[in-house]
Length: 171
Image 1 (cartoon, rainbow, N blue to C red):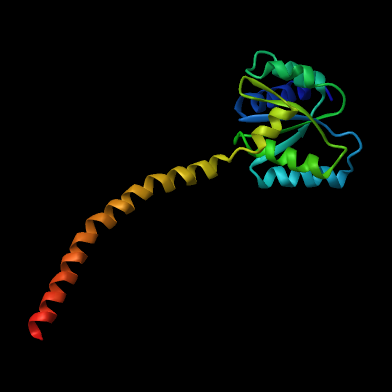
Image 2 (image 1 turned 180 degrees about the horizontal axis):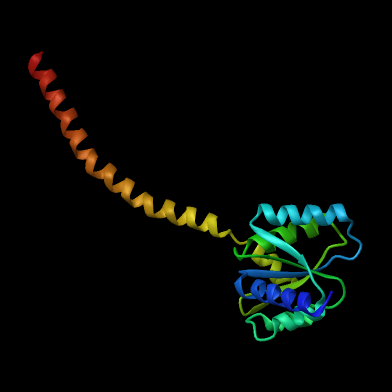
């Protein structure tokens, strides 16, 4: 890899560290190619990505970024799992680690917050952005449907009372 390629890789990694909602750092010693492809496919399906990069270049890319303090985690054979959604990458990495003993989560970063392995697990258990939006939309819609039901109820009650009165008068 020549100097220009290294500079381009450092720029790409810098953008990943700046724009990602979460970055999870893991060791992947002993994973097969098929297992890595499976991890990449899972991350892609969740809206994230997986990146293997030289630790030295990743540390250069981290310089001056909000998550700069995760540089200490970059030792040995590391892989970065990241996504814009703060939960997606953590959930993918956590689920993959449960199935593969060779995949060990070291920690990560969520903005300026450094996460240890337990922190990544806690983030993975949180509802995703889409789930939160659906919950909020449901909560916002519930009062409106209750109001519509309450407004419509007196009219239907009056109609049933008038119908009962009419039936009695006809008899």
